[in-house]
Length: 478
Ligand code: NDP
Image (cartoon, rainbow, N blue to C red; front, side, top):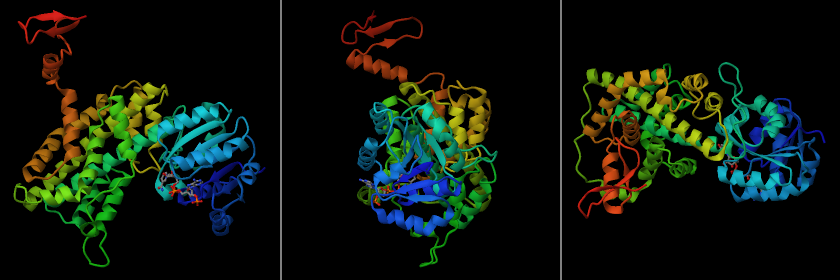
């Protein structure tokens, strides 16, 4: 028993994680249901470090030093349960099972509970960064017990991405499902970020009249400023790419129907359960759904709308500068909503998640890595009880400076008949929060009218009901 860590499930993610551990000097036991994958990994990459190839589960478990640390990197869902059922009987008290797959946090909570009875630590770990991240350094969001992090943390900190200041992009997020929950919200924010960038592209293309190549340059330019992020960087790459077969911009030959694997949908489903308004993320999920409904789109193609009209070149550049403001302001809102959801989940499940630490571990390795996360971390470090990112002075100031441009861009989009659901939802959230009075008062009146649901008054304590079908006098109901 010489291996410090074991990885079972050696498809692309598992292989790359195993290689990452080995490259960082750990002895890694490797195992896969189909043994051919194990052999192939060691043959091809054995020279990168110390691997112990195990054909059977028993061999795998025996190869590990105690307490054992086993990373499961198989298809999420039932396959993960199958692997747990196979390994759990072979393990001993104090051993740690790590699930690095994209599990739903409720499954992680269940598995943690079941294995705890056996004295086994179950750690659900969110991993972001795709294949390349797994190999070169992902952002890692571990849940599970504090005790398990003591045994596991030093290894994860070694293989994780490092932020610009050298800090590893991992830290203990909180008990049981906290890591997978935070990974889920990460993916929701990723959906929103991507949709916002897509809306900015649409406006630069059809209102500013820019070519894909010019938009690529614009995004490169933005990437040198406050929008500096991985997603902006790769957007420029995609837009600058020319299709080899046709010589046309790549973006013009790709089918415009966006697919999804489901983590964005989970974010919205859970947000609905928690009562957290993640409207930007929800619009991003719905925008993908709309794009995929070919039948509805064909049926609606002839509907009336404004004639296309691009701006004159002089006006186009000024408009582009406003699109940058709209993008930045909307991005602040989607992170505000995502962090609100993490806070709400943390309260619901008793996780005590440190929001500043979450912002910190997203600074490198993951898909939403961005310079801007440094500022979110600073905001929560300065005030851990910050009720909302919009309450942070610096963000409030920046969004205040951007709001005029933000409104103009949305007005221009509406005028031109260009859908900007995520921009518009983000602005509506901002305006709703800052409003002195909301029409929710009227909603309460309607509810009381048809359902006697009662209401509260601004000037007196208590619950009230108006006798709408009687003499319309008011009675106190509490
Ligand atoms: P896949 O999700 O394609 O899963 C393939 C692996 O699962 C193979 O090793 C396969 O073994 C194993 N497997 C499937 N069913 C079973 C079973 N019933 N019993 C035992 N083993 C089984 O692999 P990926 O590498 O793409 O992803 C692994 C996990 O990481 C997934 O949960 C995924 O959601 C998550 N993830 C993926 C990312 C990505 O960019 N791809 C990013 C972050 C997380 P066999 O070879 O025998 O078929």
